Image (cartoon, rainbow, N blue to C red; front, side, top):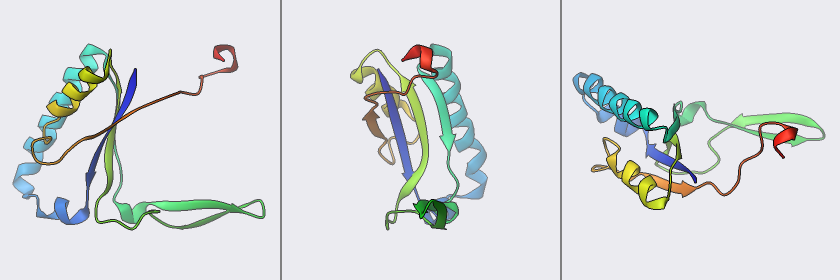
Length: 123
């Protein structure tokens, strides 16, 4: 079963994090990534740009209309996400709880219900 584990944050939080602690924090996250890539349970880990870089794209009269995002007005925004492939929900929960900063901020875990096949032959 696949799951998406989402990490939320905001620019205020990142700015408050002491600059000298960033290398250690990044090393912890990379160790987490390496550990679960090795088990085959981490399919991908993705950090997102600041919310100021988000855009909304709509189609109007057949043309793309782009405005500044994000869509929701919220203090916290999606900062990164992890794609997991686990035997069961309990295992996905264990991995989410092992995220280096899960003791400070929660990790939002969602089951992925379906996936588009990679090509027509898979359908």
